[in-house]
Each structure stands twice: as structure tokens, then as C-alpha cells.
Length: 312
View: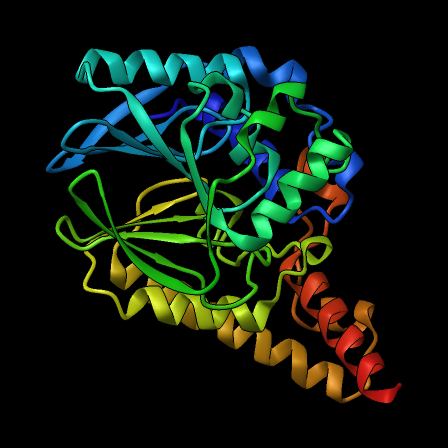
């Protein structure tokens, strides 16, 4: 269990990571926090599936027949190397596949820690983002190593695809733009486990974080939640925060749908953003994250952009 102090620090950082629309500022504080985030904890889930907490984001891995399937490679190369060392203590099998849940820096920047030639699987929009990152290392809010050029996804998924990876049945799901336009949920049907990435971020609060700068959508998030709730899964691994059950996730979906409807009602009535926030008692994020938008703010901006497009 993360300590109270450590948990508070990580919560602040992850809030910034999940909701900011200002890429240059998104990870401004991470350099100083890095030494406090290296205490990884590897926890078994079921039948060769593990999740890892204690880094900037949650990650995971699955031990296959001949190798290991990693899910997200951490934020920093140094932390990714620690995770690889932890994997080596569990199995001598090499990591031969990495699946990316989306393209935020805290989920891809650790890629250069992995062996050259590793198969990288991602939603097709993530490949676009990483290609852009290779051309401009500052384009994603926190520059990775130049070695990221060697880790452009080698296999992409557009929608939903079933795979057999090293003897492991895997269902990859992209339903709609949600947290970003490149979200990919990883469902392991044999173990009834879903790695959801930042589609689920309990560390930032009840409501989801939406990256409008990466074409995310609150409506698409609702569709994506319904899709992963329809799966025969018992455990949902979040991108930031604790594991969630199906019942807990249903409650979060209901609350977010109601919140979105309340925002839309006020927007349709012609309320300003300030009036909407006041009516809904929208609470700003705390500490270093206070400058970043809430779910009310991003949803209101999304609705305003849709209205502008319809009027053109």
C-alpha cells in the first residue's frame, strides 16, 4: 500500500497527467518527484498476470509460453529498468511484446528501457503520436530519450481485435475517443482481467480525465466504459490508483453520465462556464494541479466546440 504522503504526492502528479490541456506544463514537476516514485510494488493477480504500482502510472505484465507481455512501460527509463529487474526475478523469460494503452508520456517514455526489436502494439492513433514525437521530442509535454525512435509501434489496432500472444488470449478494445483518441483496453478473458489505462483514473477523483488536446471525448468515454463493462471481467486495473471491481466501475460510470447530463443541461440553457461550475459546486483540483481543468471544464469546452462546428 502506498504511504499517505507518497499517495498524496502521486495523486497530485497523476491529476496533472490526466486532465491538463497544456502539454508544456503537463509534467513540469515530475523531475523533482522522480526519486520518490521508484518504489515499485509487483502484485500477482491471477495465472501469470501481475500489476505494478509505485511508478508514475500503473503498469502490468503477463507471463506467456516463451516470453513476457508488458502493458505500458512506465514514465522514466530508470523506473522501467527497475520493473524489468522485478520481472526477471519472477521469470527468466524475456519481454518480447509491449502493449500501449495510450500515448501520454507517463505511459510511453520508458520504452527505451526495453530490448531493441521488441514488438510494440498500440492503437493506430498512438503510432501517429509517437511518430510525431520522434520528429519533435517536445510535442508530448515531457521529452523522452531520442531512442524513442526505435520504438514506434510495429503492430496497430483500429477498433477491436482478438489476438493470441505467446499462447495468451488477448482482446484489444478501442471503442471511441475517450481519455484520448488512442485508448486501448487490454482484456485477458482467461483471467477475467482488464487493463484499462487512463480510461479509469480513480487517483484523480470520481470523474474521468479527458485530454481535449488529444481529441478525447466525454461521450466517447461513456461508450468506452460501457464496452469494457460488457466484458466478463472481475478486476479492472486502472491507469492511476487502485484496482476496481465491476460494481465500482458501474457506479463511477453512472456518476459521470449524470455529471455530463447536468453540464449539458446547463450549457443548453445558455449558462456560462462560471455559472455551470457554480451551480454544480465544481471543486478545483488541489495543489500543483489547481491550474488544470476539471471534468466540468473539459466537458463544457467539448460541448462549446461541438456547437461551434454545427454553426459553421
